[in-house]
Image: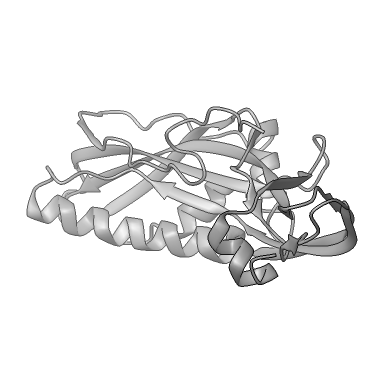
Length: 233
């Protein structure tokens, strides 16, 4: 039941990527709308037509800066940690196994990470804060959706044990580059550019394999649990 090792920008262990100050005299290459990874990212949008770069571009409509994007990368799908998704079955018998068909339900949603830094100048920080808010808004509208799933499973528990149903969700991670360029309001010349990473992990719907894994877990009751649930029998 060990979950797959996760990258630092993945679900539950998202860490902020470094926001590097870079010099740029030429515009970076834009993501190709035909790029398969870009299309896969776009596939979670309700309209199923907008690539991620278009959505990010719409969030960069400020007079003294512009955004570009590129290098969308599809990561390796991974399992989240297992979590309990059902009630518990307490078997108070001292010699008979317990069995019950139990219902499990799970709600899953996507996760977003955006690179940041505390070393930016005040003016650059304000610009970055505006961009971050816009990008977050775009991602939230597009990917921050949850859905519920569930089923019935037969749970068998040994005497003196407690059993429950656990589930791990398969998540599909993506990461894209975003470059924010600050320009002069008067000359339109480039003042400086910033590069950041934007990552999104969304629940796999089963198209790339199994959407989740369900297992029956159990352990021996503690003396205190035996008293609470079985009256100390």
